[in-house]
Image (cartoon, rainbow, N blue to C red):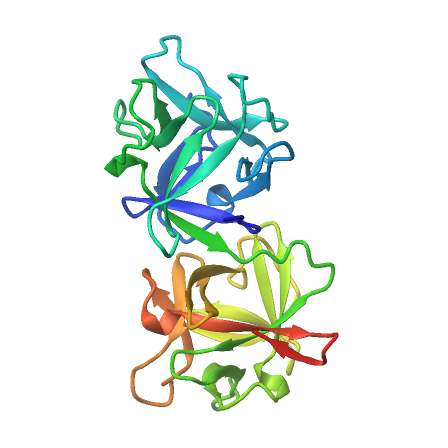
Length: 310
């Protein structure tokens, strides 16, 4: 299966992250991230030009490719680092950057990664306690499945290839579309629209290297994380990579031939509020895990058809 957009890997409740500090581990990859995918924990697949189903992996943070840093002893651990300037598709080379997915389950969200040159699975280091990404040089059967070499795969929706903003609508688990639905003059977002035939349910996604800005088509303002709620009231002034208007859209699974996604902001997942009161069905963000209320269907607007597609 080809993965066209960014992805992240998770193991033992931690996201794989690029180590960017002045320590001896600079450039290593470590399962240490607590938040939903940040720039440090985003990676991209580049399919090989010389072989099918094989690919190189590039770090979004430093634009370098994963490569194996070999140990002096072939029976020791070899480290996976993001430091290669160019992909190397020579499968006989020790600096080959090619990998292959091994999917564990039918949903294809549990995976192993096999290094093509060494024909060994990438795993979590057993030598050190830092949860570094490595390859054991112990001659294990690559078909063996260890707890430390099975990872949770998160596929993120990529709009980088779009020259224009992508226009989308979100349908919640209650069967209603998300729309700008003001309460006392405040631009809340609420799963309350019966269909997508109104402007209030459509939003523009603008891609940056750090995430996605989501703008309401009806009031022209960006989404913003305010305490626990998401509001559509932010102007484009004073935006920065650290602002609370940057989101990620993560693919979760397919249900009834429809792709479901979850929205992330900071370290939280967005979800439909199911508590009673005026805020019922509003979009909120305080969950650390994906719940049923956090999975939404994303419809894309087709300019050619003058309508949406899903």
